[in-house]
Image (tube, rainbow, N blue to C red; front, side, top):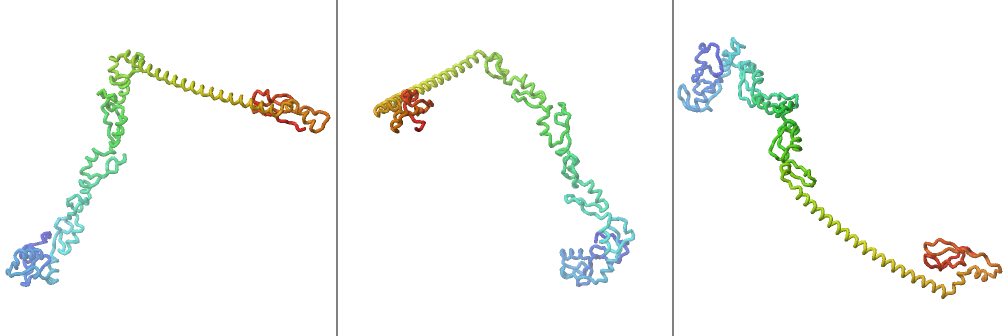
Length: 369
């Protein structure tokens, strides 16, 4: 009942006031001794004292009873003003109607919409409070670049300083780079930025702008690799070229060349020896074949002589004519050599077979009689 602001409080009867709080009775409860009190005050008193504050009789909370509805209606009809002084009810309203007023009261304190905010704000000021509340999520200022974060307002400035979608100048601006890039792309840009300071790739310990690095490494760096210009094939660091002994290097190269030549000569000798051995083997094989051929010629000649084939070979047509009883000799038959490789044809009376340059064979008659 401390939230009620009564109209003309001093004019309210003492009988309608709580004996403990001295304020109009709210939610009246009665003891068996017929003394009436506000519910909250008498319950607290009985818990601590266990007696009626007026006649000191011993009671418990369970002894309390509700008063008559008529008394409750009288008490609820007492006039009260808005406890937040909103000015909407200057003449006051019945006490039991105050709860309905507070549901729309412009000055009634309600919690901020942001769960993490602990502030209570007048209902009419809630929107303006949310607009400035540090716990309100706000859109990233870099949405145009793809930013989707919604940091709390109280840390939005910190977010802006770290947002990957914020446009920032190149870290090498002082060296001459004029590009602006997204903060999240700085590393990618730095990998190609020509104005970034980078160390020499020859580990000479010096640093240069990337645009000048190639010229330094190729033409100026004392740690770059160079070849001897005096004729040898040696490579060395530029800083070592002044102490390079070209004669010694040439001798070393000559020794390597001599060793390579000796190896090649040995390989050539081995190849010649192998080829010679192969030729000798072929010569032996040819001689063996010639011996076999001579033996075959001898065998064939003996066969011709032993079988009296010389006359047939000399005049085979006359023999055929005699066998048939013909009085007129037919013309000489044509024959072709039967030796593989010989394509000559001749009169059978010619002793070609024995004189053939390929090897001997018996003549084959071509024409039938």
